[in-house]
Amino acid sequence: MEKCEITVRGYHLDQHGHVNNTRYMEFLEEGRYVFLDKHAGQMEAWNDRGITLFVVKITINYRSPSFLGEVLEIRSGIIRAGARSGVIHQDVFRRGTGDLIIDADVTFVVFDTRLGKALPVEGALRAELLAMAEPGCE
Image 1 (cartoon, rainbow, N blue to C red):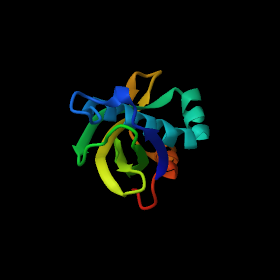
Image 2 (cartoon, one colour):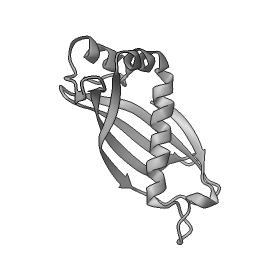
Image 3 (cartoon, rainbow, N blue to C red):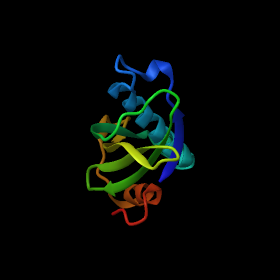
């Protein structure tokens, strides 16, 4: 899993003094960008072919609140590649404690921007996606 860190700032907080649940969507997005940056060569090759990943569903489990000044570690990786979609799993931990703050499964499709439709995940495309995935992903 690829890792990145975010420090909780004042503007992340809600009226209760902990991170607003909508901010976690931004944290997760940052984690996915860091993950995709690790695979920049593949993403550039797909971009040249008009291929991108589109998020179609996000399931988040809120486990524990986080507060001002805490450093959160976001871990992201592809855990599933089906025939029509895949899943990036993300965990957010409080650095130094191992406390799980949230976990999320982000379902995506591989989308052809030139054709305007999702592509089946098969052949070379499947192999390219699996090369980006966590060990054991099928």
